[in-house]
Image 1 (tube, rainbow, N blue to C red):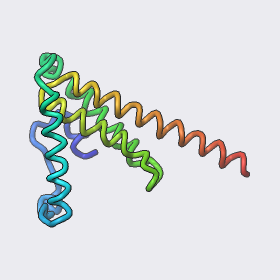
Image 2: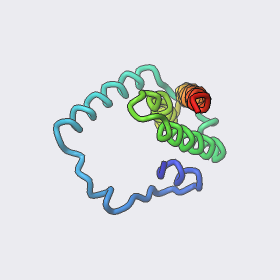
Image 3: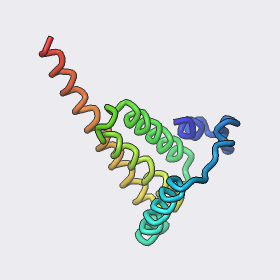
Amino acid sequence: MLLALELVVGRRTIWLPERWKRLPLAGESRQRLATTLLKLIRRLERFSRPRFRPLLDQHLSGSCSASSCWGMTVTAFVAPPFSGLDTLPSLGVVVLSLGFLMEDAVLAGIGLVIGVLGAVVVIGLGSLVLRWVRQLF
């Protein structure tokens, strides 16, 4: 969420707290995760190519995507713990970000759709649970 907010306000240099900068990225479990993520990114690279690049070069599209990432991150954060509902909004953030990094507006759009669908599911199921709880009392 911090990075998304920094992008929304237009920061060109990412700021992170010093404590976060000192966190080690080594370790067996983190290494396995990094290896798996790199395999998935390589698969996406085969699909991805620069498409509609001028759309991504606009300041407005950067701010809108950063705002979308922030909203999807908040949605993933408020999803019930251990429900798996945070997966789609989180995946949407990753695919949207990769679309921008790979300069592929189609991939970014797919990420946006995934994230929005995830947000709809989280909000929809959350409202159903709230109604059910209210009926109990």
